[in-house]
Structures are given as C-alpha cells and as structure tokens.
Length: 282
Image 1: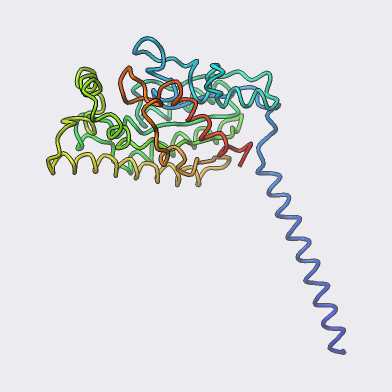
Image 2: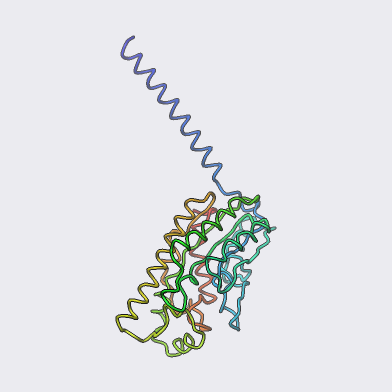
C-alpha cells in the first residue's frame, strides 16, 4: 500500500472521529442546557433571612416581597421578575427561606421545594452557621458541607429535577468594617445581639478580638468553598463563582434597621450580581 493511500485513510478516519466527538459534545451540551424560561412555572428560594429580605421593611421582620430571589418589588428586579420578563409569565414563586436558619435546616427546606414542584431553586445559606454567640459555636465546615450536599441531593432526586442556583455568603468582615465606626450601629448590634462571633466588642483592636473576627471570616471562606464543591458535584447546579462573597457592599446597601443585612438597594445588588451567573445567562 502506498504511503499516500495510508495517509488519506488515516485522515479520513480522524475526520470521522472528530465529527463523532463533536456530535457527542453537542448532544451533551443540549442535554445539560436549562429549559427555556417559558417552561419554568414554579421556583423556590431556600436559605435564611437574606432571601427573606429581612430588615428591608419598616419593622424588624422579614419582607419577602423585596427578596433578591423571589421578590415582586420592581426596584429589586429579582430572579423571579427577570424570569418572567424572559418568558416565564406563569411563574409562581415560593419563599421557603427562614430567618435565622442555618445549614441544618436546609434539607427540610429542600424537601418542601420538591413537594412544591419547584423547577428552579435558589440557595443562600451559611451566614447563621458563622454568626453564633462564640467562635467555638460556629458550624464545622465538614458538617456544613454535609448539610448542603443532603439538600442538593434531595432537590436533584425530586421529580421536577430543578435547576439549582447557589449564591455565596457575603463577606461578614466587610459588614463589620462598614459600620464599626458608627455609634448607632454599635448600639443596635448590642441591643439585637447581632452576629456576636463577628460583632462583639466592635471597637476593640486587641489581638484576641482581631483574631476572632479573622477566624469568623475564615470559616465563611471555607463555607463558600464547600458550597462551590457541593454544587459542582450536583447535576443542574450553578454556583455564583464567589460573586456575592467578593462584592464590596457600600453603606447604602446595608439596612439601617440592624446595620448588617442588605437594604432594599442591597437586595437589588444581590439580584444584579447573581442573575448573570445563572443557567439562563452564563
């Protein structure tokens, strides 16, 4: 057999293999693509007071209408409103997040979303696992990850097989730094007992207090890594890539009810930060 003939046959075989591989990759990509928004008729928000938009109303209660995830307030422009604008006109939102919830509550919330038939689920969890009375009381990172994995497994196994979006935890050290110089903020933190692990003795520059705050933020960083890994191990799950964790909130984006939670404009910032990372944009 001439060398040129062998070369032509090898080239033809290579081309056929390349076409087959391209077709396989295209099929896989299509299979992994999120359904068009028009097919999403139920969504659910899981997590804590951040997704409940606590401290954005006139009282110290939750105000889910202002939620970055499922809220109906137009100035926030939540994921719910963005999906509706993209064609999900029949979309029904459920806010299953609970103020004060830590990761241990997430699996039960996930089961609730499954029962509701949610086809899109957002998760924002972890601040309360770090915001404890003492540093020693913070949730262990391994426990946090196990709780998140259990919740994601419940969602993935549900009959609606939802698209899942996991937001990172805000930088708690940033929340402290923004308002530590405000006597009003320090007074409110003391009265409400807000996130003592981070906010106790807010004016102290003693080594022990500086190290305590650093330890809390380090645990938050570990939680965010756990969220990323848990999401990567779950089908149809998107992590925000640290968009929320890396965002430098400004004072106007923090509620003056408790000087710690996102304000109405903070909720709008969360929606704007996270939406580009979802299945329908990125």
